[in-house]
Image 1: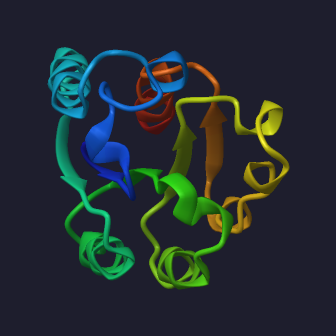
Image 2 (image 1 turned 45 degrees about the horizontal axis):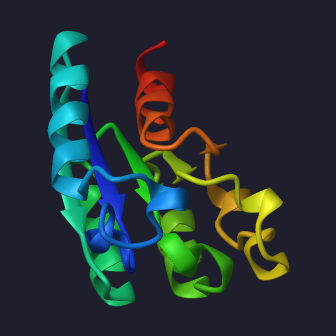
Length: 140
């Protein structure tokens, strides 16, 4: 199984920003861990991080026919990007939305995601393990 892991705005600074929320590991370190985790289960993962909403939409559309699933942490775009929402709705590739923090326990504006209703599921609040749980959902 091939899974695309997409990370959105500001997630490239993981490990450097708000360490109490996102931890101290860099996104590259988390991705390396996810690569090993997927490989240990016989699966393959590819990664893309972009602060550009358009690049994320392009990657979602490009996943059609090339990936079996998408794990998406859109960052702040989760709360207002109808473009990303429409990109997800426009493909048959299942998408699992991920948040490292428990966005429901944070600021009011973070408590609503416009993406959730077009995603297969949502995992939040387990730090980097949110990604692992999302990956597992594709092969369990």
